[in-house]
Image (cartoon, rainbow, N blue to C red; front, side, top):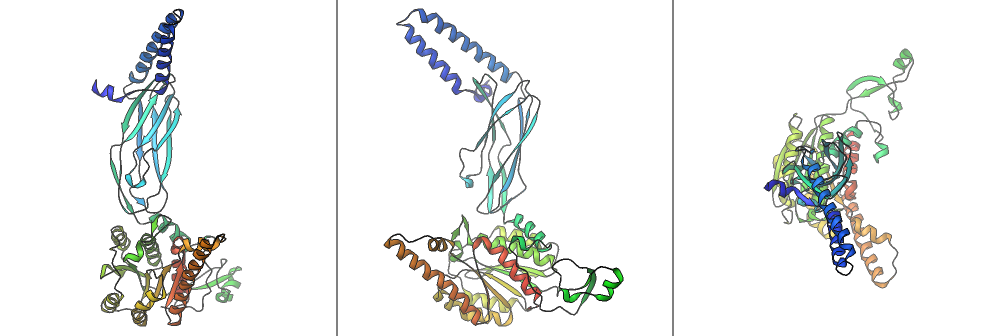
Length: 444
């Protein structure tokens, strides 16, 4: 009985009818002839109320519902949540679905309203976009059922509290891995790379496809097969590719609700997967006051899982990053020359000059690529027309900071250090482009 009253709600329609009848009773004090009408309407309302309760509670099963969650959420991406509904009532029901989302989404009034015919099964979907890694706790799935009378609402609860971990963007990993091995790269912003040369190791003769170097056409095979055939040369393999993530305070800056650190983590996951697919050795580590989370470059089948689990727990420590310590640890631990993708951020030339001696020292023995970020908010300021004195000052200051970023790129280039200045949302694409270009040109 206690459970019955906990699940029973009276609808707005019932209270509207009840108060209307109450007003009619009050009016009947002055017009006695209306008293009988009000009395009949009250009995009718109570009768319909009892009928509605019987309709909704006679069937103990009522609505069957199940929330289907992915095993893990992908950070920064839209993840689909499915709710499966089955109506076992003998009549059409009206459902109000309220799902208790994790507190991280800050959606306290999430609901969907639908109607469902008797004996049918429905599925509704919605998407959630997590903006930080960690544990996300979904609460109960609440289904509020009403009949065509809509005087009474029966609440049913399903899918008690469920925890789903949010990992770095593995959806991006799948997407870019596919694009990196097809000829659809250009449509997603990947630039076409002209090969300067080949390694000496011949791999196979294959049919020509658009994008192949015409200089590799094998004329004898072409004449024999009566279709264009090209020689395919094998890229050099098993080269170390390290992603180095700065976890200092400069990486806590947010853009489009994600921190620079999370953009770097998502890009690290993708580039590690592509490097392994290209049969290179992928590794990673983080640094701030010291080097941490070191995963030596390897090609083992378990390497991606190790990288994913490590990236899941990375957080900023709000300290100033020690590039001298970074140089010492790289010198000590990385004996083989490899590609180092350093994700960090420099806002001013002075900030670069303090670290430049250590970057130059790293670049002597390794192929170093320094990756830092455009301030897209400043770009938006520059694109708006200045209509007041204050806006003119703001635009002037924004131009100064944007120009500083370009000077940083030039300073690194003058010292023979590769660099990528990228928008946060373009980080993954630009990093893949750079990796593929380095591989194509045989710079490692």
